[in-house]
Image 1 (cartoon, helix red, strand yellow):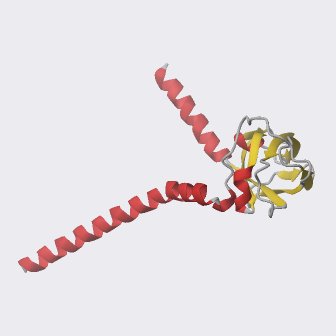
Image 2: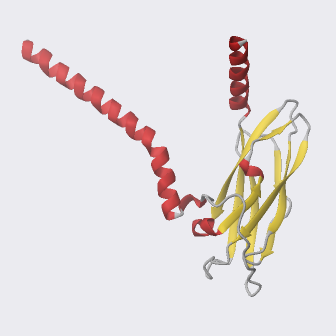
Image 3: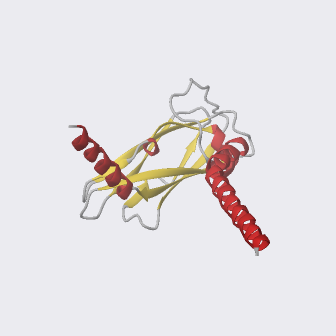
Length: 191
């Protein structure tokens, strides 16, 4: 009887250790995936953002940039690119815009998540100013033009002649309401 209890304790200990290890591994997957994508260029993550040094424009080359706007399945907004395709020279500053409209009867907040295809091109696409850097709050029945200023690095490999820049718009209103409620509760407590 005593050895059965000892075996059960060891089994419970092993199961608990396994659960803790699986949780830790799952928790570590997100940062590991981000590092993996940054190193390999997979998933089209654009890591070059903000001001950029002056680049010499390569007028001998043209790159097609396809602009795609997609709503997440739970996002009711109208979301579209100003133009569906641009032809740019590497090193040329390019300004374009996306448009969003909130057709609902309530205030909402959205966040645009970019993706670049082919993934190899992501490291050569530099976003100088992008609506995806910030959350986009819109009142009911409000619309907005959201600018995008980007440059394609002249070092873009010659075999890449078309880049697809896609934005998916997500509804983050519940998260924003929670953050606002927490700030208000904190203010009430500290007063």
